[in-house]
Image (tube, rainbow, N blue to C red; front, side, top):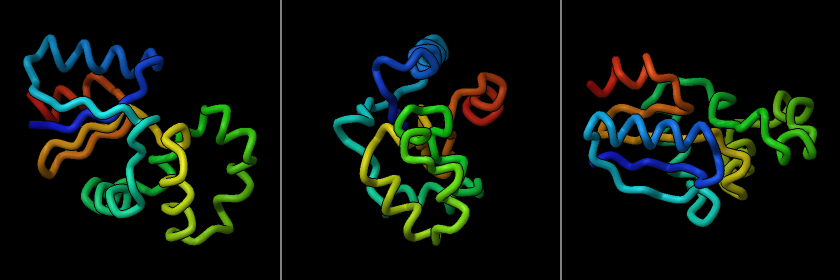
Length: 117
């Protein structure tokens, strides 16, 4: 069963959840604000996905902008970035779907279809 990490007020997360339901993909829902991913989880998912760590940041979020992270991230180590991501679920790009070896960050229907169907 997949792990679906999302924020209930996020329209993209709602679209992704509808897509999962419509395609009968079984998942366990985990609210990102209440159960933020740990640094270890994020490190593992980033490694499995092959995506750059920056893809795990919610770059369009208010918290990202208010912390001026577009300027700070380039000078931070990967470990510092992971520790920062683990402090608040609102910094993390969502939704995240973890299904075995498949890690999907953000919702792009074509990508999800290619990986899950």
